Length: 243
Image (cartoon, rainbow, N blue to C red; front, side, top):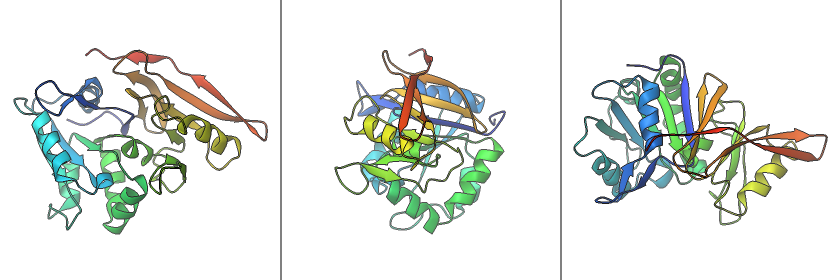
């Protein structure tokens, strides 16, 4: 199955702590499968580039789906690609999910290995593109990042499939909200959207369809430039997904 239109689910969530395993798929992951058309054996590919293709995290993702019908795979780029034909592998997926970590490192590695046009082709073909944190910012023009150290700084060389800025962990990390607002106010980033931990943004094409969350009170927000030096943040109606 394929999404009815190019679809992105950009989040500050996805997998949640598990009861019997380190992580388990949360409602945001289930929503990604819903957007992909809910095939009986959905194909899910995990990209852990932002965390250096950490094998522990890869194992957690595989373990999260044990006992389900989900066909899990991963694409690793360190120390060499684990897939012979990256394009064919990614185009065969229902959902491509990008993990968190260094968005700067992720973008550099993807471009080095030619993933940018491949991912755009996947998006246009109806493969749902999703992810958390770095895996959310990457689809946008840019956002705020700790890729270069504990003091957050702007990043503006995202893939720009979506012509917006993206803020993540909006409620959970004190530096995120004020810096995101300032960068938009000063024109360093375009207007955009931000998510609390547990919230996500569903885009069809380049239009925001709705904000969703897997827990109360997690919300999404729009942030727009006002005048020459200001920014206005507005809380969006955020639909709580069934757990």
